[in-house]
Image 1 (tube, one colour):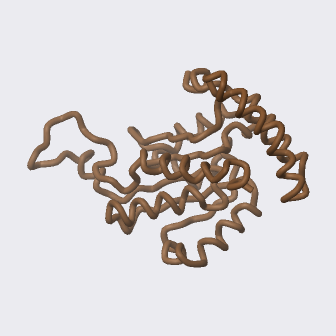
Image 2 (image 1 turned 90 degrees about the vertical axis):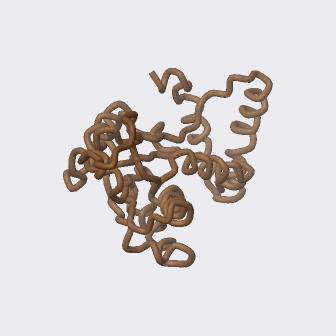
Length: 218
């Protein structure tokens, strides 16, 4: 359905998202100080494997990309991802994918956690996460603000919060075409392919209600 609704572009968005984060790169938090032959304790920590938390990531789309990038581009074979989702069925789908090629070799580097992003379990300790990602999920949270507080709690000092989400189209011509596609085509595709028009009608309405780029940033 994602391929049909976005004409496959969602894959490009996710790929670009992960590339921009460059997981597994070292140092994780570049220092403004000049290099030294005697690195500080903080600089030494940066060479450790990343611990990444992917929220609302049940199917593993982002987690697998994070590990692919870390492993294949940065030769990092130890960083790991905790995949969290409030929906156990989504996590089950992700676990199934993780047991099959080409992802089966990542099994020891993946953890699957049923959790609410607005109340992350204490098993995820304060100041323990290097990278927190959430892709196409935060607009559906009951309280995005509370989710941000939880993200801040679990991130290490200098850790990265990365959100990939729909927003507003600022070009009027593109906006016209986008809305015609969203409200005219996507619910119909949902009805024909998935037999569920209502869920896809909700999808496009939730995107329409979501904050603009600047409002969300601020």
